[in-house]
Length: 476
View 1 (cartoon, helix red, strand yellow):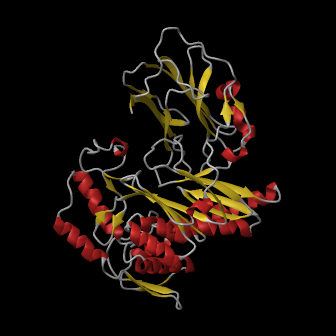
View 2: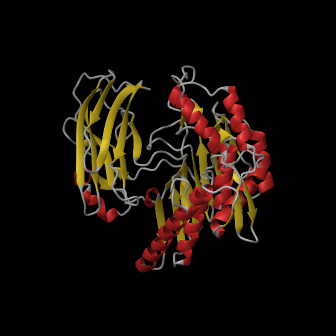
View 3: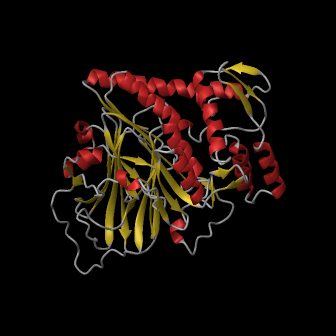
């Protein structure tokens, strides 16, 4: 989760932040299917009884009814039934039997609840597994942003797991993650500028099921994508993987979240028709074959697409031994980094710097620097000693809309180029990972590797701030 708040003074900003977080906590206690004590979990444990529900849960159930009808059944809370079937199949390494598919479809096609919106009650009718994650995250983000505005913020940006809500006096640059690029520092697929809008992205490229070795020899760019999508078509009880990524811009967060999921299930023509019927919706779809499909109004949101460079090493050339070959462009380095889990479900991410040093221990490439407040950058003392902030505020305020991934796990790439974009010579270089928490723990890892065209993998030790790191020098 990332939050940017604009307010008249610091006190108002802190009040708005507190209201935003309190709203998320409250909605979690109502709508989280993963919290056994939440209102929705307690309601799902009943069957056949009339229960009085909170306005929020009633609204969400009503929205599911609406979008189930609007999408022709492509959006359905009972898709959880088929998801569990495919999870079991993946564990056993075989596809579900047709009889199991048929039973799942029969279970999902039942009416699972009955609402009395005027009376404020609902009846849970079946024992079919249900999950409300399709757009509830976007719904919660929208209510939290509204709470921040009501508490004194004049502008707010909230990004929860790749779903973005922008409200009030704030413009936000949003990078759309490339589904065929797995690293955090890969160039974005597209970049848009939004005001008073919600952006949601759904896709099959980060989570899913593998029943056997991924057979993508003819399409190597798909080799990192799960064999079967975690997004299930409730009409067929089968994974819907024809759309790798679907991004939707809408005024209402729940609409953006619902359509992003639905567009990952529906055919392209069905999605186009649904967007027109809904109104005020723009979208970007990437098919599994690599086709890019946009709505007519998508271009109105596109920002000038410049590759941001916020940091630069001092202009000190790194000596290169004579006679060595240039970096083999058929190879690249993956840096897999996991931040340590803290025993607090809401803790602030530490500052992180990842860079490459030459044999003289001078930096030649800054791969990533993650931070929120520039005044704490000196706590990344090793990186800060040799790198300088150029002062690009746009880069600081940029956020990313993407399919949800596991928290705390990141992948970065090094393509063998220095900060000026020039290929380095083959040979030994040191990968540096530095993590610091505001006025708190600190950790740095350094690992020297030989980048001369021979694959190698190195696992680095975990620590107080780095839960683990692995370096993988391999063919592209």
